[in-house]
Image (cartoon, rainbow, N blue to C red; front, top):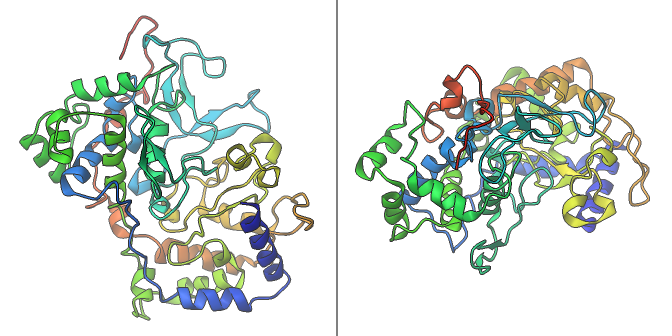
Length: 432
């Protein structure tokens, strides 16, 4: 998307030079805008049986090849939809500038499901090359993952037919994770493997403290084939149906009960004191140009200087356009105060560090004929930083997300109860 990228750079350059009017006018109108309805593709209408099935699949560790990782392992509500665990991905060599704090996945498994040493991680859990992003900013986005590789059009991996013509990034995200060797899959995992695993698994057999809606659904239909029949009309388990169910559940995770939402609805007392100063500071420093209300993201991709593009090409890996080198998706600020760490590298360990990053970020290379130096540098005082933190911490956190109450309630995972999580397999253990 070179055109979009170039236009956004020009807008931000003007803002950095002191031209605030356009951004302030946009933000002023957005300040009273409610979250739009979550787009639902016509090919995957939302139903209650499908939602509750998706909730069970999302939190079921049995979907991974070694029974240690669920979708929800890396996307927990109380951590802002991200991963409270941390592992080090060493890149090409450990302890150098290309190291990333990512999310632990499963141990390396061969085609038969037996542990095999990994060149980077040995027999320990593999670690993703980017930190897990929050899943709460994903509901409106046309493309997902840090680089946007989960795109809008969905193709059935079994038939090759188009399953969703437009608006299926959530479904594609699911399909990608299920067969990703560093995350949930053994080497050369097939869709037949995935379907067989789901069919023979007792729903959420490894979890405890099941939410009431999940417990009721499992009591009424104690097998996955029965649950798929309720959701889809027959008991067939297919990859596209797994993706449809999980995406349906995710589309119900709408975090719209923050103080800012009350403020946007007309309650002028919902944001007060330093949080209100922080809201004004976000506009004055043009943070809202990218973190645009009401979603607090514009769902675009930029390089902000977190790391050299040569170490992670980011968006360029998807678009194959050198102009997109190093670009990463703009994350939402909603529930960002709950995140355990920040940026796609995971290197910033608290919200304050994420805000102060913009006071003196690394210089960026020239792009589209525009010098990059200082593009994302903002002359913020420590008072400004404190005010912005106050706004994000107190105005953008949904208490249901923080407290993991419905619809953000969840079971307790086996890996959370284990002394070693994710667990390490013995060299002779074989799993499906």
